[in-house]
Length: 192
Ligand SMILES: CC(C)(COP(=O)(O)OP(=O)(O)OC[C@H]1O[C@@H](n2cnc3c(N)ncnc32)[C@H](O)[C@@H]1OP(=O)(O)O)[C@@H](O)C(=O)NCCC(=O)NCCS
Image (cartoon, rainbow, N blue to C red; front, side, top):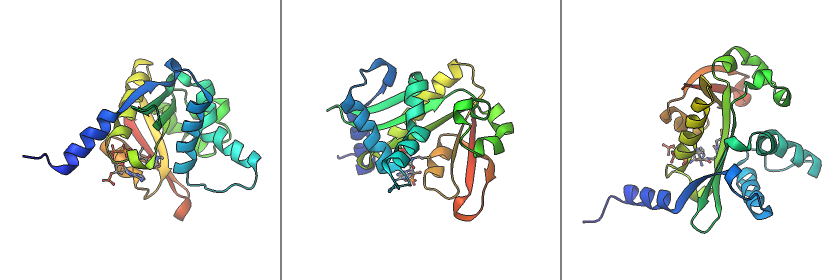
C-alpha cells in the first residue's frame, strides 16, 4: 500500500537535502550566488532605489553574518549542489554588539536580548519549503548556540507572518513586540 502522500513527499525532500556548515565548505562565487538568490527571492523587499541600497540591505540581513559569524552559518544543499536554503546566526547579544547598532529594534528589546542573545535568519527557496528543512537548520544552530553557552535564542519577525507558526512549532514563544499596524514586529524566544 502506498504511503500517505504528505509523509512520502516530506521524507523524499528531506533525503534530497543535506545540511552543511558554511565554514567547512569552499565559499566559491557560485555558492555565494546561490545564497544570495535564496536571500533576495525570500526577502520582503523586492526592489531597491540603487545598487548601493541593495548592497546595504544584503549586508544588514546576510553579509555581516557570512563575514563575522561563518561558524553559525548553515547551508541546506540539494544532492545536485544547489542552495536550497540557509540559516545565518550569531550568539552575541545584538543589543550590545556594535555591528548590529543599525537595527533599532534590538535596543527596544535589550532586556530580552540579554536573556536570549543568540539570533538567526533562515530562508529556503520556494520548492524546498514545507518539508522540514527549516526545522533541521534551526536544530543545528540551537545545538551550537547551546554548546557556546548561550542561554536562549530569539527571532524577530512580522506580527501575523506565516513563519510565526513555524517558529512556534520549533518551541519559540512570543516575549515582546514593538511597532504598530503593518510594521509591528514580534520577538519570539526560545530558552535553550
Ligand atoms: C519559514 C521557513 C524557513 C520554514 O522552513 P520550512 O522547512 O518551510 O518549515 P517546515 O516544513 O518545518 O514547517 C512548515 C511551516 O513553515 C512555514 N512556511 C511554509 N512556507 C512558508 C512561506 N512560503 N512563507 C513563510 N512561512 C512558510 C509555515 O509556518 C509552515 O507551516 P504551515 O504550512 O502550517 O503554515 C521557510 O518556509 C521559508 O523560507 N519561508 C519564506 C521566508 C521566511 O518566511 N523566512 C523567515 C523569515 S523570519
